[in-house]
Length: 124
Image (cartoon, rainbow, N blue to C red):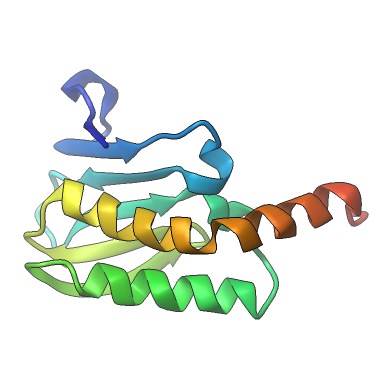
Protein backbone atom coordinates (compact mmCIF):
# COMPACT_ATOMS: atom_id res chain seq x y z
CA UNK A 1 0.00 0.00 0.00
CA UNK A 2 1.42 3.37 -0.86
CA UNK A 3 0.34 6.94 -1.17
CA UNK A 4 1.14 8.20 -4.63
CA UNK A 5 3.33 11.29 -5.01
CA UNK A 6 1.20 14.33 -5.87
CA UNK A 7 2.72 14.61 -9.35
CA UNK A 8 1.49 11.09 -10.18
CA UNK A 9 -2.13 11.75 -9.21
CA UNK A 10 -4.90 13.14 -11.38
CA UNK A 11 -6.72 14.47 -8.34
CA UNK A 12 -6.08 15.69 -4.81
CA UNK A 13 -4.72 12.40 -3.38
CA UNK A 14 -4.01 8.91 -4.63
CA UNK A 15 -3.31 5.48 -3.17
CA UNK A 16 -2.47 2.18 -4.78
CA UNK A 17 -1.74 -1.42 -4.00
CA UNK A 18 0.55 -2.94 -6.57
CA UNK A 19 1.64 -6.53 -6.58
CA UNK A 20 3.58 -8.84 -8.84
CA UNK A 21 0.29 -9.55 -10.68
CA UNK A 22 -1.39 -6.17 -11.12
CA UNK A 23 -4.03 -7.37 -13.58
CA UNK A 24 -5.38 -9.69 -10.87
CA UNK A 25 -4.63 -7.83 -7.64
CA UNK A 26 -4.10 -4.15 -8.53
CA UNK A 27 -6.28 -1.56 -6.76
CA UNK A 28 -6.13 2.23 -6.68
CA UNK A 29 -8.09 5.09 -5.14
CA UNK A 30 -8.14 8.74 -6.17
CA UNK A 31 -9.56 11.61 -4.15
CA UNK A 32 -11.14 14.19 -6.39
CA UNK A 33 -10.65 17.87 -5.81
CA UNK A 34 -14.00 18.74 -7.35
CA UNK A 35 -16.77 19.94 -5.09
CA UNK A 36 -19.41 17.22 -5.33
CA UNK A 37 -20.84 14.29 -3.42
CA UNK A 38 -18.43 11.68 -4.87
CA UNK A 39 -15.10 12.35 -3.18
CA UNK A 40 -13.23 9.18 -4.22
CA UNK A 41 -13.02 6.75 -7.10
CA UNK A 42 -11.71 3.23 -6.55
CA UNK A 43 -10.31 1.23 -9.46
CA UNK A 44 -10.21 -2.56 -9.29
CA UNK A 45 -8.10 -3.65 -12.23
CA UNK A 46 -9.20 -7.28 -12.47
CA UNK A 47 -12.75 -6.21 -13.27
CA UNK A 48 -11.61 -5.30 -16.78
CA UNK A 49 -11.35 -9.04 -17.42
CA UNK A 50 -14.10 -10.59 -15.26
CA UNK A 51 -17.25 -10.53 -17.40
CA UNK A 52 -19.23 -13.67 -16.60
CA UNK A 53 -21.47 -14.68 -13.74
CA UNK A 54 -21.48 -15.94 -11.15
CA UNK A 55 -17.93 -14.62 -10.53
CA UNK A 56 -18.59 -11.11 -11.83
CA UNK A 57 -21.67 -10.57 -9.63
CA UNK A 58 -20.00 -12.10 -6.59
CA UNK A 59 -16.97 -9.79 -6.86
CA UNK A 60 -19.10 -6.72 -7.58
CA UNK A 61 -21.36 -7.41 -4.58
CA UNK A 62 -18.35 -8.02 -2.33
CA UNK A 63 -16.61 -4.81 -3.44
CA UNK A 64 -19.76 -2.78 -2.86
CA UNK A 65 -20.18 -4.24 0.63
CA UNK A 66 -16.49 -3.80 1.50
CA UNK A 67 -16.43 -0.16 0.43
CA UNK A 68 -19.66 0.59 2.31
CA UNK A 69 -18.07 -0.91 5.43
CA UNK A 70 -15.17 1.57 5.39
CA UNK A 71 -15.44 4.12 8.17
CA UNK A 72 -16.92 7.48 7.08
CA UNK A 73 -18.26 6.20 3.74
CA UNK A 74 -21.78 7.52 3.11
CA UNK A 75 -22.53 6.14 -0.37
CA UNK A 76 -21.02 3.86 -3.02
CA UNK A 77 -21.97 3.38 -6.67
CA UNK A 78 -20.48 1.77 -9.75
CA UNK A 79 -19.19 4.37 -12.16
CA UNK A 80 -17.69 2.09 -14.79
CA UNK A 81 -16.83 -1.57 -15.34
CA UNK A 82 -13.84 -1.38 -13.02
CA UNK A 83 -14.46 1.85 -11.06
CA UNK A 84 -16.59 2.55 -7.99
CA UNK A 85 -17.30 6.08 -6.74
CA UNK A 86 -17.46 6.78 -3.03
CA UNK A 87 -19.02 9.62 -1.04
CA UNK A 88 -18.00 10.67 2.43
CA UNK A 89 -14.65 11.30 4.06
CA UNK A 90 -12.92 7.90 4.28
CA UNK A 91 -9.18 7.48 4.03
CA UNK A 92 -7.81 6.45 0.66
CA UNK A 93 -5.67 3.81 2.29
CA UNK A 94 -8.73 2.23 3.93
CA UNK A 95 -10.61 2.17 0.60
CA UNK A 96 -7.70 0.47 -1.18
CA UNK A 97 -7.28 -2.01 1.65
CA UNK A 98 -11.01 -2.90 1.61
CA UNK A 99 -11.07 -3.46 -2.15
CA UNK A 100 -7.76 -5.35 -2.03
CA UNK A 101 -9.14 -7.75 0.59
CA UNK A 102 -11.98 -8.60 -1.81
CA UNK A 103 -9.64 -9.00 -4.75
CA UNK A 104 -7.41 -11.30 -2.71
CA UNK A 105 -10.37 -13.43 -1.62
CA UNK A 106 -11.34 -14.00 -5.27
CA UNK A 107 -7.81 -14.10 -6.76
CA UNK A 108 -7.68 -17.85 -7.46
CA UNK A 109 -11.02 -17.83 -9.25
CA UNK A 110 -10.12 -14.63 -11.14
CA UNK A 111 -6.82 -16.13 -12.33
CA UNK A 112 -8.66 -19.18 -13.62
CA UNK A 113 -11.25 -17.00 -15.37
CA UNK A 114 -8.57 -14.85 -17.00
CA UNK A 115 -6.65 -17.95 -18.12
CA UNK A 116 -9.80 -19.30 -19.76
CA UNK A 117 -10.29 -16.02 -21.62
CA UNK A 118 -6.69 -16.09 -22.86
CA UNK A 119 -6.93 -19.73 -23.93
CA UNK A 120 -10.25 -19.24 -25.73
CA UNK A 121 -10.53 -15.66 -27.00
CA UNK A 122 -13.83 -14.74 -28.58
CA UNK A 123 -13.94 -13.22 -32.01
CA UNK A 124 -15.07 -9.57 -32.17
